Amino acid sequence: MARPSEFLTGVERTFGEDEIIVSKTDARGIITYANEVFLRVAQYTEAEIIGQPHNCIRHPAMPRCVFKLLWDTVQAGKEIFAYVVNRAKSGDHYWVFAHVTPTFGPHGEITGYHSNRRYPDRDIVTKIEGIYQLLLDEEKKYPQCKEQMAASTAVLMNLLKSQGMSYMEFIFSLCSDSDGKHADEALLKQSEALCANA
Ligand SMILES: Cc1cc2nc3c(=O)[nH]c(=O)nc-3n(C[C@H](O)[C@H](O)[C@H](O)COP(=O)(O)O)c2cc1C
Image (tube, rainbow, N blue to C red; front, top):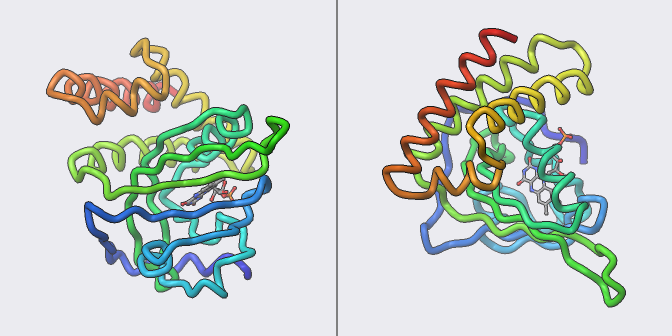
């Protein structure tokens, strides 16, 4: 299946706080399983989605560096959490808080990946949207995918470094109490400054 057109409706799809959107892939990121919630929210049938690369639901508002971090992390055998906006078949979109993990075979080799996604906190999505927009603005300065990826990765890593946080610490600071919220507001300001100077 070719990636669907970039047509977007601007309509957000939601799902229940008690629901989990699940997909599994092989080691190349080809979808091998999608649960009922995935199919309903993404608006695909099982026949349409199984066997497709996971970027078939990619939304253009996602910075490249987030997926680079995702792949670098899971290919290293580690788990990752990420806020992701996906594009449903109709062009609607839906935000998720994803937990992606590698699946290991009997000899410790990675045989595939598994993603469980929950409905995200709206306040956090608003903040993440701001940060992703800054990363996208950085990417737009370059014509080639590779350059875009390198540029947004550099901005993301620099701003995490400037806050003394790893990516995972940053993600969990968003989920935490008022101290955590304060930390990510500071991070957004810092990222704006870094982009302005880039
Ligand atoms: C288990 C797993 C789940 C993934 N889930 C998503 C997803 O929900 N949305 C998405 O856009 N990419 C997802 N990806 C990442 C895609 O494979 C791909 O890297 C991303 O869509 C960027 O595609 P692009 O390189 O063509 O821009 C997932 C990858 C894995 C291994």
